[in-house]
Image (cartoon, rainbow, N blue to C red; front, side, top):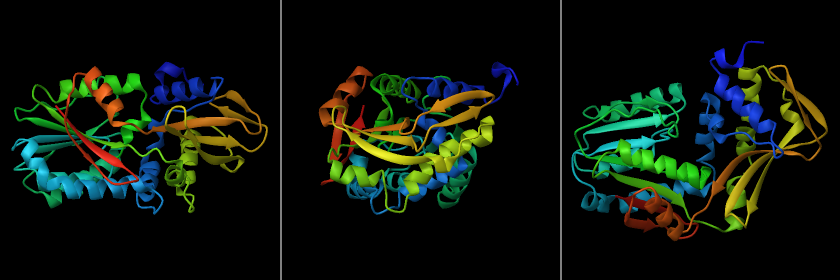
Length: 311
């Protein structure tokens, strides 16, 4: 077995071993997004049950005429966790002469393909993709003399705990420099009747997305997960206002990863993702803790999504 610290995938392996060695087995959700995982997530965003994407898109379109009153011209936009770059087009069209666009995503192939399509649609715009995890403190964002606007749609903030949010928003404040702004998309829906179906769709695309994490571990880390021996479960935690995604073991079983073994009991779960739902007051608290103030808030009808413009 190669020494852990000399392997190119050592962080992935270390995180998996650490997570599966914990009393409540867990895996970091950032590893969902290999090329297949990114494609599956884009399929999820088009599902009838998955309200966040279509609700936020509608809200962006409705609010777009107001953006230029709050955001200066010639702004450079930095999008964290850029994905397929669907929502950025609405924002770019609403802004007055944006000077550049920096999309950031962990999936390099997915990011570069999406960036090429965007560059074709906006030939005068300087598009500078950056491959990386937006939570990485060493992630280098190109500097610019123009005012900067961070863009973080899709309610991805809900995947982070308070400490991670503080670290992320604090670093973003440095990335975007003095007088920077941040347009943040947040899920403020707390109704389990619409939340559970959004994360457990009838077509089982979310289940495939969740189990693809095990397939990636098999492919990249020499593991032997039997995907058919686990099922997807989405549950609402009322105490923390969080949708939790789990993979549940159907039976007692043993899994080997890089020559290390892990025992699973029937019914035991791997906690793969949290998706927190926020109140406006909670976002205000988190923003202020990282040095931001809320400049403006736009909110959709139920199921509710909100756009927070921070400065």
